[in-house]
Length: 227
Length: 79
Image 1 (cartoon, each protein chain N blue to C red):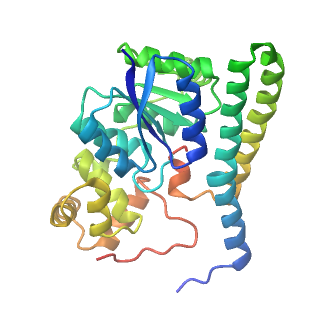
Image 2 (cartoon, chains in turn red, yellow):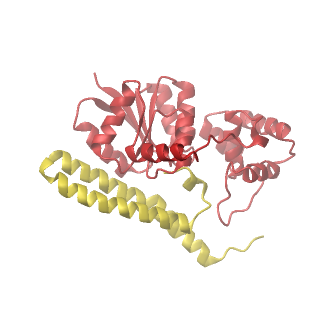
Protein backbone atom coordinates (compact mmCIF):
# COMPACT_ATOMS: atom_id res chain seq x y z
CA UNK A 1 0.00 0.00 0.00
CA UNK A 2 1.25 3.45 -0.91
CA UNK A 3 2.34 5.90 1.80
CA UNK A 4 0.23 9.06 2.07
CA UNK A 5 2.31 12.21 1.61
CA UNK A 6 1.41 15.83 2.30
CA UNK A 7 3.34 18.32 0.12
CA UNK A 8 4.00 21.71 1.68
CA UNK A 9 5.53 24.50 -0.39
CA UNK A 10 4.33 28.03 -1.06
CA UNK A 11 5.33 27.65 -4.73
CA UNK A 12 2.82 25.66 -6.77
CA UNK A 13 5.46 25.03 -9.43
CA UNK A 14 7.55 23.12 -6.88
CA UNK A 15 4.59 21.10 -5.62
CA UNK A 16 3.64 20.21 -9.21
CA UNK A 17 7.18 19.05 -9.99
CA UNK A 18 7.41 16.84 -6.90
CA UNK A 19 3.92 15.49 -7.49
CA UNK A 20 4.91 14.53 -11.04
CA UNK A 21 8.00 12.69 -9.78
CA UNK A 22 6.01 10.79 -7.10
CA UNK A 23 3.28 9.91 -9.58
CA UNK A 24 5.81 8.02 -11.76
CA UNK A 25 5.85 5.27 -9.14
CA UNK A 26 3.30 3.62 -6.88
CA UNK A 27 5.08 3.82 -3.52
CA UNK A 28 3.79 7.26 -2.53
CA UNK A 29 0.42 8.92 -2.91
CA UNK A 30 0.04 12.68 -2.65
CA UNK A 31 -2.76 12.90 -0.08
CA UNK A 32 -2.83 16.68 0.00
CA UNK A 33 -1.04 19.95 -0.63
CA UNK A 34 -0.57 23.01 1.56
CA UNK A 35 0.92 26.44 0.89
CA UNK A 36 1.53 27.46 4.49
CA UNK A 37 2.67 25.86 7.72
CA UNK A 38 -0.63 26.68 9.38
CA UNK A 39 -2.57 24.87 6.63
CA UNK A 40 -0.19 21.94 6.88
CA UNK A 41 -0.81 21.57 10.62
CA UNK A 42 -4.58 21.65 10.05
CA UNK A 43 -4.29 19.00 7.33
CA UNK A 44 -2.18 16.71 9.49
CA UNK A 45 -4.58 17.03 12.44
CA UNK A 46 -7.46 15.99 10.21
CA UNK A 47 -5.97 13.40 7.83
CA UNK A 48 -2.83 12.14 9.61
CA UNK A 49 -0.63 11.43 6.56
CA UNK A 50 2.33 9.03 6.86
CA UNK A 51 4.83 11.56 5.55
CA UNK A 52 5.14 15.31 5.13
CA UNK A 53 7.50 16.68 2.49
CA UNK A 54 7.95 20.34 3.35
CA UNK A 55 9.90 23.42 2.27
CA UNK A 56 11.90 24.93 5.13
CA UNK A 57 11.37 28.55 4.05
CA UNK A 58 7.61 28.89 4.27
CA UNK A 59 6.21 32.35 4.90
CA UNK A 60 4.76 32.83 8.40
CA UNK A 61 5.26 29.62 10.34
CA UNK A 62 8.46 28.29 8.75
CA UNK A 63 9.25 24.64 8.02
CA UNK A 64 11.12 24.11 11.28
CA UNK A 65 8.32 25.56 13.42
CA UNK A 66 5.71 23.68 11.42
CA UNK A 67 7.61 20.43 11.99
CA UNK A 68 7.48 20.95 15.75
CA UNK A 69 3.77 21.80 15.56
CA UNK A 70 2.89 18.77 13.43
CA UNK A 71 4.73 16.41 15.76
CA UNK A 72 2.80 17.76 18.74
CA UNK A 73 -0.41 16.50 17.17
CA UNK A 74 0.86 13.50 15.20
CA UNK A 75 4.16 12.24 16.68
CA UNK A 76 4.28 9.24 14.32
CA UNK A 77 4.32 11.49 11.28
CA UNK A 78 7.62 11.37 9.37
CA UNK A 79 8.78 14.77 8.19
CA UNK A 80 11.18 15.38 5.32
CA UNK A 81 12.53 18.92 4.98
CA UNK A 82 13.35 20.36 1.59
CA UNK A 83 15.74 23.28 1.41
CA UNK A 84 17.32 25.27 -1.34
CA UNK A 85 20.46 25.67 0.74
CA UNK A 86 22.57 23.48 2.99
CA UNK A 87 23.59 26.00 5.65
CA UNK A 88 24.33 24.45 9.01
CA UNK A 89 21.77 26.52 10.87
CA UNK A 90 18.94 25.19 8.70
CA UNK A 91 20.09 21.57 8.87
CA UNK A 92 20.58 21.55 12.63
CA UNK A 93 17.33 23.42 13.33
CA UNK A 94 15.36 21.03 11.13
CA UNK A 95 16.79 17.91 12.77
CA UNK A 96 16.32 19.38 16.27
CA UNK A 97 12.67 20.12 15.50
CA UNK A 98 12.12 16.42 14.77
CA UNK A 99 12.49 16.17 10.98
CA UNK A 100 13.72 12.75 9.83
CA UNK A 101 15.36 13.91 6.63
CA UNK A 102 16.91 17.02 5.12
CA UNK A 103 17.23 17.14 1.37
CA UNK A 104 18.24 19.84 -1.02
CA UNK A 105 15.83 21.04 -3.65
CA UNK A 106 18.52 20.42 -6.21
CA UNK A 107 18.64 16.74 -5.19
CA UNK A 108 18.02 14.28 -7.99
CA UNK A 109 14.78 12.32 -8.28
CA UNK A 110 16.73 9.29 -7.07
CA UNK A 111 17.80 11.08 -3.87
CA UNK A 112 14.29 12.40 -3.26
CA UNK A 113 12.71 8.96 -3.60
CA UNK A 114 15.48 7.31 -1.58
CA UNK A 115 14.92 9.82 1.24
CA UNK A 116 11.18 9.17 1.28
CA UNK A 117 11.68 5.39 1.22
CA UNK A 118 14.23 5.52 4.00
CA UNK A 119 12.07 7.74 6.21
CA UNK A 120 8.90 5.76 5.51
CA UNK A 121 10.74 2.65 6.80
CA UNK A 122 11.60 4.47 10.01
CA UNK A 123 15.10 5.62 9.05
CA UNK A 124 16.65 9.01 8.48
CA UNK A 125 18.29 10.67 5.50
CA UNK A 126 20.51 13.63 4.68
CA UNK A 127 21.39 14.72 1.15
CA UNK A 128 24.94 13.50 0.42
CA UNK A 129 26.13 17.10 0.05
CA UNK A 130 24.71 17.92 3.50
CA UNK A 131 26.11 14.85 5.25
CA UNK A 132 29.56 15.32 3.65
CA UNK A 133 29.70 18.89 4.90
CA UNK A 134 28.58 17.96 8.40
CA UNK A 135 31.07 15.08 8.57
CA UNK A 136 33.92 17.35 7.53
CA UNK A 137 33.00 19.89 10.16
CA UNK A 138 32.65 17.27 12.89
CA UNK A 139 36.04 15.81 11.93
CA UNK A 140 37.62 19.25 12.08
CA UNK A 141 36.04 19.71 15.50
CA UNK A 142 34.38 22.99 14.66
CA UNK A 143 30.80 21.83 14.89
CA UNK A 144 29.69 22.29 18.45
CA UNK A 145 26.21 21.88 19.79
CA UNK A 146 24.82 25.32 20.30
CA UNK A 147 22.91 25.64 23.54
CA UNK A 148 20.13 28.20 23.66
CA UNK A 149 21.42 31.63 24.76
CA UNK A 150 21.71 31.54 28.55
CA UNK A 151 19.23 34.37 29.14
CA UNK A 152 16.57 32.32 27.34
CA UNK A 153 17.27 28.99 29.03
CA UNK A 154 14.29 29.43 31.33
CA UNK A 155 11.86 29.50 28.40
CA UNK A 156 10.03 26.47 27.05
CA UNK A 157 10.30 25.62 23.31
CA UNK A 158 6.79 27.03 22.85
CA UNK A 159 7.74 30.27 24.60
CA UNK A 160 10.85 30.59 22.43
CA UNK A 161 8.63 30.20 19.37
CA UNK A 162 6.27 32.92 20.58
CA UNK A 163 9.18 35.17 21.56
CA UNK A 164 10.69 34.96 18.08
CA UNK A 165 7.35 35.93 16.54
CA UNK A 166 6.81 38.80 19.00
CA UNK A 167 10.29 40.10 18.17
CA UNK A 168 9.45 39.97 14.48
CA UNK A 169 6.57 42.34 15.15
CA UNK A 170 3.68 39.89 15.03
CA UNK A 171 0.62 40.68 17.13
CA UNK A 172 -0.88 38.23 19.63
CA UNK A 173 -3.76 37.71 17.22
CA UNK A 174 -1.42 36.84 14.32
CA UNK A 175 0.61 34.48 16.50
CA UNK A 176 -2.59 32.83 17.75
CA UNK A 177 -3.70 32.14 14.17
CA UNK A 178 -0.28 30.80 13.16
CA UNK A 179 0.05 28.48 16.14
CA UNK A 180 -3.63 27.61 16.36
CA UNK A 181 -3.90 28.94 19.91
CA UNK A 182 -6.35 31.27 21.61
CA UNK A 183 -5.27 34.91 21.63
CA UNK A 184 -5.54 34.86 25.42
CA UNK A 185 -3.09 31.94 25.55
CA UNK A 186 -0.55 33.90 23.53
CA UNK A 187 -0.98 36.87 25.88
CA UNK A 188 -0.35 34.52 28.81
CA UNK A 189 2.86 33.28 27.17
CA UNK A 190 3.98 36.87 26.73
CA UNK A 191 3.29 37.70 30.36
CA UNK A 192 5.04 34.60 31.61
CA UNK A 193 8.07 35.31 29.39
CA UNK A 194 8.28 38.88 30.67
CA UNK A 195 8.23 37.60 34.24
CA UNK A 196 10.89 34.94 33.57
CA UNK A 197 13.12 37.37 31.68
CA UNK A 198 12.59 40.33 33.97
CA UNK A 199 11.37 42.75 31.32
CA UNK A 200 8.27 44.94 31.42
CA UNK A 201 7.17 45.30 27.81
CA UNK A 202 7.37 44.01 24.25
CA UNK A 203 10.28 46.30 23.43
CA UNK A 204 12.25 44.55 26.19
CA UNK A 205 11.36 41.12 24.81
CA UNK A 206 12.36 42.21 21.30
CA UNK A 207 15.65 43.62 22.50
CA UNK A 208 16.45 40.39 24.32
CA UNK A 209 15.52 38.26 21.30
CA UNK A 210 17.81 40.38 19.12
CA UNK A 211 20.71 40.54 21.55
CA UNK A 212 20.72 36.77 22.06
CA UNK A 213 20.52 36.13 18.32
CA UNK A 214 17.16 34.34 18.57
CA UNK A 215 15.97 36.54 15.75
CA UNK A 216 17.24 39.41 13.62
CA UNK A 217 15.52 42.60 12.65
CA UNK A 218 14.82 43.03 8.93
CA UNK A 219 16.83 45.92 7.50
CA UNK A 220 14.85 49.17 7.73
CA UNK A 221 12.39 47.80 10.26
CA UNK A 222 12.00 49.36 13.66
CA UNK A 223 10.99 47.60 16.85
CA UNK A 224 7.45 48.48 17.71
CA UNK A 225 4.91 47.58 20.29
CA UNK A 226 2.34 45.25 18.77
CA UNK A 227 -0.90 44.93 20.72
CA UNK B 1 12.02 57.90 13.07
CA UNK B 2 14.81 56.36 10.99
CA UNK B 3 15.01 57.42 7.32
CA UNK B 4 15.31 54.57 4.86
CA UNK B 5 17.59 55.12 1.86
CA UNK B 6 15.40 54.46 -1.25
CA UNK B 7 18.23 52.83 -3.17
CA UNK B 8 18.97 50.51 -0.24
CA UNK B 9 15.29 49.57 -0.15
CA UNK B 10 15.33 48.78 -3.86
CA UNK B 11 18.39 46.59 -3.45
CA UNK B 12 16.68 44.77 -0.60
CA UNK B 13 13.60 44.22 -2.76
CA UNK B 14 15.83 42.85 -5.53
CA UNK B 15 17.41 40.49 -3.00
CA UNK B 16 13.98 39.34 -1.84
CA UNK B 17 12.87 38.71 -5.42
CA UNK B 18 16.02 36.69 -6.10
CA UNK B 19 15.55 34.63 -2.96
CA UNK B 20 11.78 34.18 -2.95
CA UNK B 21 11.04 34.05 -6.68
CA UNK B 22 14.06 33.35 -8.88
CA UNK B 23 15.57 30.69 -6.60
CA UNK B 24 12.38 28.59 -6.45
CA UNK B 25 11.93 28.91 -10.21
CA UNK B 26 15.44 27.55 -10.79
CA UNK B 27 14.73 24.69 -8.36
CA UNK B 28 11.48 23.92 -10.15
CA UNK B 29 13.33 23.87 -13.48
CA UNK B 30 15.69 21.31 -11.93
CA UNK B 31 12.75 19.12 -10.91
CA UNK B 32 11.35 19.29 -14.44
CA UNK B 33 14.71 18.18 -15.78
CA UNK B 34 14.60 15.16 -13.46
CA UNK B 35 11.27 14.25 -15.02
CA UNK B 36 12.80 14.44 -18.50
CA UNK B 37 15.51 12.05 -17.32
CA UNK B 38 12.92 9.67 -15.81
CA UNK B 39 10.88 9.61 -19.02
CA UNK B 40 13.84 9.53 -21.40
CA UNK B 41 16.74 7.74 -19.67
CA UNK B 42 18.95 8.22 -22.73
CA UNK B 43 19.09 11.97 -21.87
CA UNK B 44 20.66 11.33 -18.44
CA UNK B 45 24.12 12.66 -19.33
CA UNK B 46 22.79 15.83 -20.94
CA UNK B 47 20.40 16.38 -18.03
CA UNK B 48 23.30 16.04 -15.61
CA UNK B 49 25.24 18.73 -17.47
CA UNK B 50 22.31 21.16 -17.46
CA UNK B 51 21.57 20.36 -13.81
CA UNK B 52 25.15 21.29 -12.90
CA UNK B 53 24.71 24.65 -14.60
CA UNK B 54 21.43 25.18 -12.77
CA UNK B 55 23.06 24.31 -9.45
CA UNK B 56 25.72 26.92 -10.12
CA UNK B 57 23.01 29.46 -10.89
CA UNK B 58 21.19 28.59 -7.63
CA UNK B 59 24.42 29.08 -5.66
CA UNK B 60 25.07 32.44 -7.35
CA UNK B 61 21.49 33.58 -6.69
CA UNK B 62 21.84 32.61 -3.05
CA UNK B 63 25.09 34.52 -2.63
CA UNK B 64 23.68 37.62 -4.30
CA UNK B 65 20.42 37.47 -2.33
CA UNK B 66 22.38 37.17 0.91
CA UNK B 67 24.52 40.16 -0.03
CA UNK B 68 21.45 42.27 -0.76
CA UNK B 69 19.36 41.34 2.29
CA UNK B 70 21.56 39.83 4.97
CA UNK B 71 19.23 40.54 7.90
CA UNK B 72 16.02 38.93 6.74
CA UNK B 73 14.65 36.43 9.30
CA UNK B 74 13.18 34.26 6.54
CA UNK B 75 16.56 34.06 4.90
CA UNK B 76 18.01 32.61 8.07
CA UNK B 77 15.56 29.74 7.89
CA UNK B 78 17.12 28.26 4.78
CA UNK B 79 14.36 28.11 2.18
